[in-house]
Length: 289
Image (cartoon, rainbow, N blue to C red; front, side, top):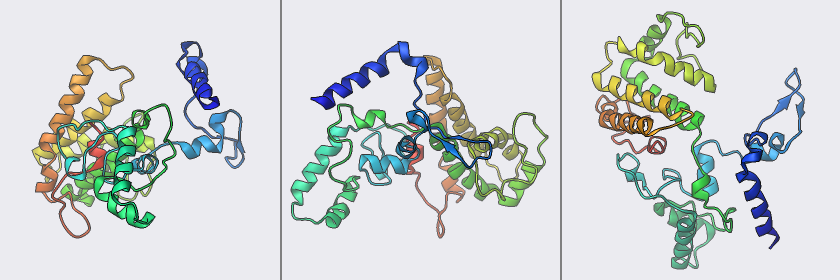
């Protein structure tokens, strides 16, 4: 009974528009000017909120009890991740039902044996998940943030493929040849020497990339179309307000990207350490749906 009452109180406070301007949901850290002493004030400045922050796909998999190379939002398997079509949404209940059904099929399996057996079903094999019993569907509150779902995805995948397509040295030369812009970073030494990127750095990179690659000798038309469409998607997805028109534009951009993405397989730029990867079954690209 107390847990239900606490839930009702939290539901009332979070849904009351009177308090909308007085609530903060984002974890934050407050430091002195020397950046060494940390202060703790409201709940969102505490270590707990920062530890609970769901940032990237790995954290989502861990919380939801899913195996990697699956989707935290729908029932897509690894083979479905590169498809244009959307799959039915998954629910917390479906995850728990699958776990219980598989445990019934393998009642004597040890924890390690169970983990290995359920991987093929897209589950991590974690039983007694921390969100079991909540009165909300965990699948409806897990979402991808802009930094990891859009900007870091572009850097980790698109930029690697562009570098393989065009060549690292030529890409650096094109960055260095760009006219200086006010308000964004200018990559005077290219980008190959960067070992760590901030969110702003990712955004500045996206601002430059179209004029950088448009004149490269090895830039194919399909590459330009795919990159242009994905950038359109990234920019539209960040609008503070969406309409039917912008949502249609978002779908068009994603559709255009899917129509042209295979160029990165055809030109061998989508490659692993030893061979070309001949599929686009990438969780972060699938998460754009």
